[in-house]
Image (cartoon, rainbow, N blue to C red):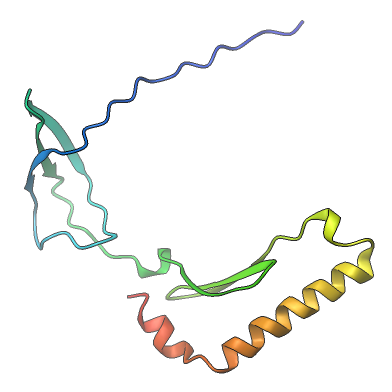
Length: 128
């Protein structure tokens, strides 16, 4: 017997321009940083207050992936600890395993040419 599940949809409210008072524990927040805390709606004329939790922010550069190169079917990213290569090849782009292998070889060769001219130590340093 099949049962139906009803998805509940939360109401979304957008505040395009707000006055935010930030109460932090340390340095000023930088781009792409996240802070944990609580957001309070203070007044009706779109005034908010954000209080950061007492736990200080600890940067984790290994979580921030930077795009190094992109090809038709793939991307290569780097962070402080790893290199990640992803390929997305549609089934219609190849007929058999040999065609798929040719596409992969071509993509890897194209990425290798651009990586050979790149200073990877400098790219990894940008992750911090």
